[in-house]
Each structure stands twice: as C-alpha cells, then as structure tokens.
View (cartoon, each protein chain N blue to C red):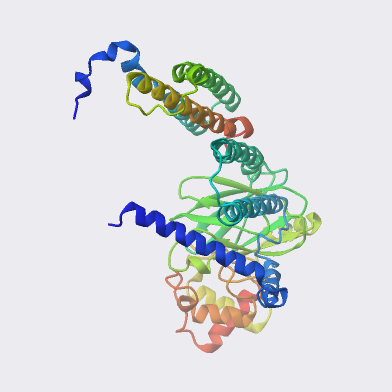
Length: 131
Length: 354
C-alpha cells in the first residue's frame, strides 16, 4: 500500500488538502442552523419569551444559512467542473479525479443541506405559538 | 455469512415471485375475488361508532381524518406507481435502460419528487399541529389524570371551579380548552371522535382543545400505559347544546341532593360509618376527602368506575362489592365485608346523588 503522503505531485492542485474539509462545510451550516433553531425555540418557549421575535430571528438565521449553502454549492460546482469536461465518473485515482470527485460530493452534500435547512425552517414559519 | 451475490440473487428472486403473485391476483375472476371483498365491506361498517377516528364529530377530529385520508390515498397511489414501475421493468420491458432515462428516473423520482411531495405535506400538516391546541373561545376545563380515573374541574368565569370526575361535558359549537396534568405517572387523554391526543405529565401542564360539532356521547380513553388498570381508564365525553350545558353546570355547582327513600337514608349512614368521606367528597355533607373522585353528583353521570360500568343500583353494588376485581390494583378497598342490605343501601344512596 502506498502511503498517500508519499505521492509526489500533490501540488498540482494546491487546494486539495483544504477541499477535504470543504465538503463538510454545507452539512456544518445545516447542523448549526438545526442546533440554533431547536435551542432558541426551547429556550424562548420555556422562559415565556417573545415568539414573534424568535420567529423573525430564526427567519434571519435561515436566510443566512441558505445563502451560505448556495455559495458553497456554487464553489463546489466549479470544483466539480462538470460543464467543461463532461466527466461524470471521477474514479481514475489521479489528482484531477480526486479533486473533481470532492467537488461532486460537496455539491451533492450542499443540495441535501439546503433541503434540510428549508425543512427545519418550516415549523417556525407555519406555527405561530409555542403550543 | 452469505456472499453478497447470493443475497442479491435471492432478493431479486423473491421480488420476481412477488410480481408473479400480483399478476396471478389480477387474473382472478371477479366472482372469486368477491369472496374476499364482501367480508372487507362488513369490516368497513365497523368504522362507525363513538370511539372512532373514522367517524369524526368534532372540528379537530375532522381535520385529522382529512389528513389521514390524504396520506392514505397518497400512499396507495405511490404504492401503485412504484409497483407498476416494478412490473414494467421486470415483466413488460426488462431490457437495460439508457443512461439518460435511468438518471432522469433516479434524480426525478428519487430526489426531486420526494422533496417536493414531503415539502407539500409539511406545509399542509404542520399548521394542523398547533390547531389542535387553539385558544378556547368558551370555558377552560382542568383535567388531572389519576391511577386510574380523571379529576375534572370546570373553571367558571369568576375563577372558581366546579369539581366532577370521570366524565367530560362539552358545549357544541364552542371551542373548549383543556388544561391537562397528571398526579403520579404519565397518562394521555384521547377522545378519537372529537380531536387530537395529548400526554398528561406529572408537574407539567399540557393543553388540548375541542370544538364538538354534534350532540352525543363519545368515549375517551387513557392512551398512555399507566399501570395495571390502564385499559380500564376510560371516560364518557358528553356533548350538549350550550343551553343544556349551562343548565347542567348550574346543577353541578349545587350541593348534593339529600337522600329521601329509607334505603338511601340508611345508605348515607353506611357511607358515614365506613369512612368513605375520608377519600370522597359529597358537597353539603361532612364528606370532604380529596383522594378519590368527587361523588356529589355521581348518580347523574353516564358511567361509573371511569367508563367501565353503568350507573344503576346494581352497578354501584357490583362496584362496591368487587372493586379490585373490576379494577385491579386500584387504591379503593373492596367493601365485600358489608352485609348485603348495607351494600344495597349504600348503592341506593350513591345512585340517588343525581
């Protein structure tokens, strides 16, 4: 087995090491939005706070989260580079393929994160009270 | 361990045999199928009744019924679509699909369609949740679940409360709020024909509200396992016209009737002698216990023992003489040591507390 650290030409795609992290960013935004939504709702409802302000605040957090995910999705789309080379299967094990595969994965994760954030935002949008 | 190939192969084979069964069913003549369909029609008639979600008599139950119908019909359509697709790819056109068609199917049917469908269902069903707890425009009733009965207190406009038990009276056409609590373990209140279900949790208030649409007597049930006699913890929900309800509530607020027949007078003596008043309240008498149900107007209720008996003298005598057999592990002692005459007298007294 070849240790990945022994592969010489990693510098061809210098963003390689960071992009492994980058695929987690969209789900991370989703997780943060989820935690803020549930935490803030539990706190405000338990302490009898302003439900109107809570809904407005969660609306703002949702807008920021969705914009962040759209931006990440756009970055990942560029990364995947499907429009230029029409290469769906990035399974050759080359640096280019690894690079584009990570973009592909990040793009799909951004889509599911977008759906997750949108669904989590529905209860505060549609339910007016803590009841 | 099976090699993965064997598992895939077997799964595929079992799916194929399923398909064959489905085709076989379609080839049956109607006459043969009728033997299955006709008994099913008789089962449908069992959907009616006073404890049925399929026979809604309140605005909230109707909303839930519509939701269930939409979900059931939707699920049936989906099932037919997926099943039809399955028959298509295994029987009618078992050739390999083009990559384009396969991707359209996976992305369209596997991603876009469910996202849109589930999103639509969320938007339709989420408001129903809070609607089950809408603020009342009529009165508020405090219900506390005990093992295994219901303490019911009607809150009057001046804040005072009229206490009753094991029966819920609701005016038709008004939204009545229920403030729920529990004494010792978690219970849940459910009147399927009138509306939603809510947990009753010790030390925590929960809410539910009902807007009954029809006059009638419906059955409610504790819907969270709460001990030995959980299944015997029911109650009657009586919906009345607003005028009849106001009249009834006035009568409930009054003290107990004074016993008049010789049997009932003797029964009142037995009641005092046996110390029933340590646990039960009969307003207007020295009996002021708060451990068990308020008995001030117990003879005027529709049921006894939290929905398990009627309210004839025989029912009262049966309950007093076989309490633990009728409701296992109940706190109330069984009064089988009373003489038959005392037992019947006590039953006559209680039955007379209209």
